[in-house]
Image (cartoon, rainbow, N blue to C red; front, side, top):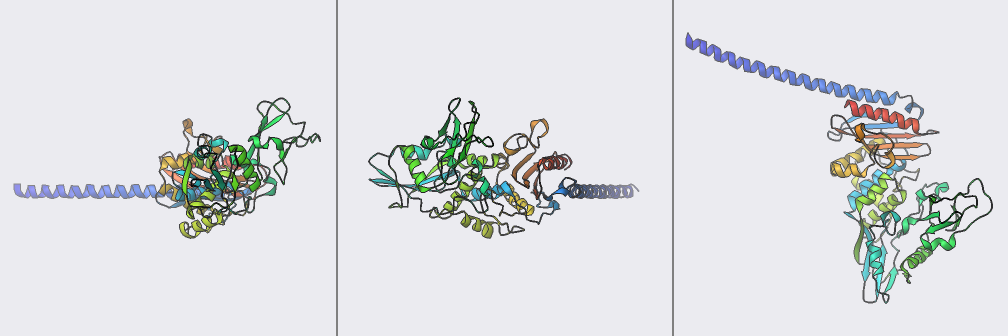
Length: 459
């Protein structure tokens, strides 16, 4: 009897273990099913909120929400359709440059012998740029070239038009539409500022003799205007001036202008033409992340165009500076798996010829997520309520940003694509694209904030 009792007790303990194990499995499966149901309910809710939004129904809206870890799409509204991306194009430029450029911007190809120095420009946007005054090693090297050594600049690697395809003609006198060139200087702009109560001054000083004053009394537009076919500037005597007055105008690119401007800056003669030797060493200028942040945070079109030129130069060992070649390489080789092949024509997004789908941008953002450390990636994108073009938008709780994204705007276009950090600590990829509307984009911004806050608080 005692032995039978022990056997029975042993069996009971084994049965109890099996029962407990079975119950744990049931609870686990139930928990997973509940979580799955919750995720499905969240996806349906987001899909419904975007689709039925009274604000979004007035425009053509595309939206994709993706989990970068699983690659699963959580919501998709018109995600396969093409949209004009405006400055969301800079996300494509950023990825390309991260793929091609190293830690520092290539500044110039430098070769020299006993009698001369030959410079082959490589599109570096930071050379003499007022926003990058801390990083001017190429200029420092040039100032140390002995006077008895000739300096020759060879710009034959660059042969692209100064304005991109599809750029608006009515933007050509705006600083955000600065021309692209193989050898940019001073950001290809000139700065006008008050020199007194009734006069203007200009930087760089080379342009002082080309500053004109008009007394025609044009009350409609007294602001300084660059003459269309050259670099002279006219402004009206009615222009109100105070110590804070400042404006920037683009420079019309020409070989003669570059030649004279460089001579004026170096205070010495410079030859312009094909050098004897185009093989030299790369002199680097500025940390690339400093340049990327300028492009992404301030949505700097000039920087974006020059970065893509520099990337094309690296791809060809600086034998050719041509954006089209690096764009084709990216689309044919690196991004041949994109859901819809984009129409990509420039680095900045100034062109309305650019066409990209929200799904495409989501895939590119996932590649960035997979390939870049989170800290670096988030530092390159504007942070909601903190920095860049969304410093006044999408504020987080207690000053902690939850949106890291790039804007894109022009007439009838507003886009926002990037990353949203949820309350659970997860990060999701999103792409909002709005086209074909008239009037202010403020309602769109408010509605997007409502959706993004819901994602933050419920996922």
